[in-house]
Every structure is written in structure tokens, then in C-alpha cells.
Image (tube, rainbow, N blue to C red; front, top):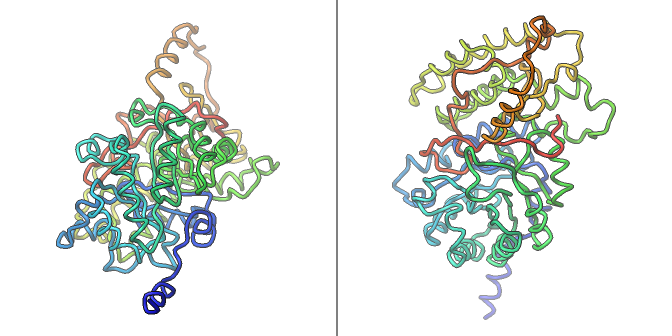
Length: 465
């Protein structure tokens, strides 16, 4: 008995709940979501430079990761050989996310990475068809017994905590009971994505902050809110509306990796809309793209070719809408995965050409405060920054398009002499030939899926820069 007792006391205590949130994670409020092919190591490094306090890895499929002989899949999803992923000095705090429907496979997979992260997360939110076929993500949400086993086996057997990210149900009552079940199973942090499983693609719609607030009030572990975040004012509004401990962003942060930068500056400060402060939270997008490429070049860990192109299309989107020829050049770049770093110059060349054109347009608007160059997207009513600055992207819903078309039909044609000012003409977008986000991130799916990102449909409360 004394030997057993000695062994027990030698095991380090595993922190949970708010103690884990405070003492290990550092009480993060600004979190980057798990995004397939997009929250990879290079992106995590860039994000940390711009205010991200906690980041999740892309989702890993435990069914494939469990196979130790499948070194290609393992190294592509979490590279243990290079020694950079999960590095305590450069890649923490970090949560590794898995999807699974087999508790034993999940545990074996989680054991592989438990020394290289601060927690393991279970994906219960992926709404894509591939998740339905594979029976994981949000398509497990009706099998509460299995979900309990998946979480509990990690809670009991890992040396680090388990967390969970899920989507809401149609009613507040069922959503709350679901969240309480996740807590009973052992989840030490719960991320509530305020959309239904059916809300994806053109049917994305708005996230329901009321359900997130109800979850927060019902459980005793930290809660992260996910959904409806485009600008910094949305972060503040979400935290106040939900009472959540942190806000998680996916698409909003992909299009503007500086989403969390300078967020400590008060929203009601007179200087909040000054050029200096606006450039902190909306840097020149081409500078962010070049910085990202520099990180990719410097890493020993390989960044996927599709991931790099996906990031560039998203970051540079405001400029690519206007500079169609550069959009075509970017799309035509072909890089061999075997010689990826040597071939990055093709991307750098496109970015440098974009930089020259954006500097030209910025110079043409000199003398006009940036806040006076902000326009309003006519269909959604969301404001748009000058096109040389990083900013969120959003797709109008079918209903918004129809409403806008109907409203336009009732208006008289504009006067022929209505000519915009040079600065506004420079920042006004032109109609693209096809959607620019052609390198999709599939925010909660497998890397093989290469699915389109969920569209943020605006009309979101308190949307401001």
C-alpha cells in the first residue's frame, strides 16, 4: 500500500477548469480557431505576433493518425521530427484538435501529442459532408453516449486536459443539456459555436449569442464563444453579450491576422479611429502576406502548398478584387511540394508587385484620414476599409441579395455626372470574375477535403473596425 501511495503522490497534479485556464493558458481571451490547412505552424507564429493568445491546430483525424506506419499523414498534420510544433518557447499555448468516433483510437492518437501541447480538443462541430460520411464532428451530436466516452477516456487517461468544441441545437434547453453533458464527461473548456449543424455554406446565417450565454451560465468550466466576429468591436460586443471567457475567431482572423492586434486600446478612446491605431488593427495586407512567407521560409517544418496559396488569397483579397491580373498570376503559380521553399519566390514576386500598386493607391489618398475612406458594402451594410488594408471578407446571403435587388429596382438611375472622388474610386472594389477564396480552408474539416470556408453572413451587431 505504501508503494502505491508513493507512486500516486509522485504524479503531477493535472489542472482543470479555471485553474488550467489561468495557470497554464494564461487566461486567454483572444483565440484562433482550429482551421484545416490554415491554422498550421507558420500561421500560428504570425498570429501570435498580432495578439492571438491561444491557438488550436488544424483538425486531425484520429482514425488516420493512430496508424504509426502512416508517417506521411502524421508528419503532415503534426510534425514531431522537426521539433518546432508545440515548442514551449514559440508555439504555446497550443491545443491540438482531433475528430474521432472510436475512443481507443482517439486515446492512442492523443497520447502521441500530449507532451507537445497544453490540451487535446474533440471536434464536435464540423458540419461538412465528409464529416457526415466519416461520422464525426457535428454528426455525432445525437449520440451522447459515444461523445461522453470519447471525452471521458481522454479525461481519465491523459496527463493534460481535454476540451470540446461544438455547435448548438435548435433550442436553448437542449443546447444547455448538451454542454452540461460535455462538462460531466470531463471537458475542461467548452467552445460553443453559436450555429446549428445545418448552418453552412450559403445557409450559414448568424451565430446565436443567446445560446452561448445560456451555456456560459449553465456550466462551471470556461466557455469560449465562436461566431459573428469580423472586427474588434464584435469581440467586445460578444464578450458582453455572452459573458464568455474568450472569443474564438476563424474566418475573421484568416482575412485579417491582425484582428486581435492593439485590442487593449479602448474602443471609446478619441484616438481609436486615428490612422495610427487603424493601421495597428488593419495593417497593409501585402506586408502581412510577405511576413507570412518569410516565416514559411524560415521554418524547418514544411507548410503545405495548398495552405500557403489559401492564406495569400485570403490576406490579399481586397487588393486582388481590384488588381485582376495579379489575381490571375497568383492563381497560376505552381509549386512542387518537394521544392516548396525554393519556389516561394514566385509568390514573393506577386506580393511585391501588389505592394507597388497598393503604395500607389495609398499615396493617391494621402491627406485624407483613413476613417474618411471607409465605405459601406451596399448589400450587407458592412463597412469596408480602403482596399490596401487587411480586413474581413463576407458573403451576402441570398435573402440580402434579393432585398438589395428589389430596393435597387425602385430607385431612379443615378445621375450621369456622379463621379466619385479619386480616393474613393481607388478604394472601390471591382466585380471579380469568380470568388477569390478559391483555396478553401474548410475551417473544421480534414486536410483532404479542401472544402470552401463557411461564409460569414453579416448584419452582425456592433460591426466596427
